[in-house]
Image (cartoon, rainbow, N blue to C red):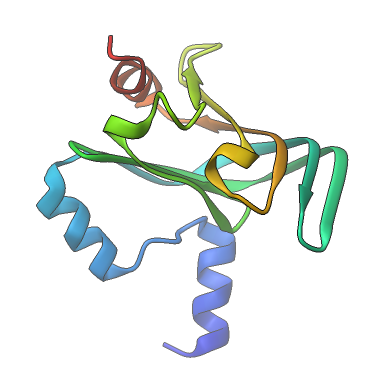
Length: 139
C-alpha cells in the first residue's frame, strides 16, 4: 500500500493502530478494540508546541483500545491516551458515559504530556462505553 493511501486510510477511518500493535494488544489480553468511531474532540485552554486553542471543537473519527494492562484512546489523527491501567489515577484521566453508548474521556494535557497544557475531551460513540467506564473507574 502506498504512503499517501495509508495516510488517507488512517485519516478517514481513525485507525492509528498498526498490525504489530494489534498483535501486542491481543497478547496483553484484549478486552475492547473499537475503531473508526464518530469522535468529537474538545480543547480548552490548550497549548502545545506550535498550537494554541482557547476553545476548539473538532469532529472526526477515533477509537479506543482496552487490554488487561493499558488504555489507549485516539481521535483527530493522534493518540491522546496510552496509559497503563495501574497509572490511570495518576494520569488525571476521567471516563464517563454521559448518554448510553457515548464514552467521554477527559484529561489534563500536562499530566500526560510535559510539553502541553489545558483540558482535552474526547467523546466517542461506541456500544462499549459502559465497559470502558467500568474498567477505568474500577466499577
